[in-house]
Length: 324
Image (cartoon, rainbow, N blue to C red; front, side):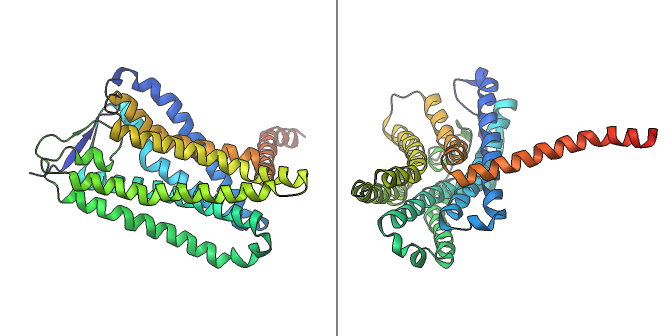
């Protein structure tokens, strides 16, 4: 027997509080979409920002918006209206894009770490190494990696037979949440999930750590204190983003597999937060730490403010014109 739809129930045990949980989640989602949208707009419009660091930042912002949009709207709908019935193909599509975008987020962070490594450790080769062609290839490579890694998970779900229940105690569709409803053996699904995570996100974290170890070693050897301060400022924002992303992701990943005594509602909330907090924090962190982004965003805000004032003055001006 194969179910044609799954029922997503939300956060088990907190059904009476989900309407209140939706308030901060809605706020974070709006902040993530608006903040990352501003970053993409600034980088796209200003040709002076068409440099590797800002292009990678725009990639991260686009990925963040897509990652939030794949999961959060449905999550909020469940919080507001109760359990939601999702057709099997839609469930598979959400699972695919959710996992693929999470992996591409990790890959973009790795690319940004490499950008900082080249800029600080081998600055004379920065222009020759990080060309526009290479950045385009990096973008295609991270998409190809995500699709290649996540696609087998879809086929592993398609081979399963579901005869127990179609109720998923979660706010969105994810691989092991669906697999656990199957009647047949899911050991292969579990091995695949663990292996894929370690060989992608795990290796990304190792390479990022290595790059920053090399960066810090180079920075401490710089003769000028001002130069060291500038280098730390360049990497500070990225380090904050990395810590937020990987701390939440690894904590959620390991508690799901080994935290058997952790309450289920805690696991579900963690699974939601590690997909929502990084996209919310990224534009804030980069907006504060990256001077060029901050200046351009403030410029857009001031232009909007002056335009709003001008629009408010139009009716009064028209009144005086016709009263003469």
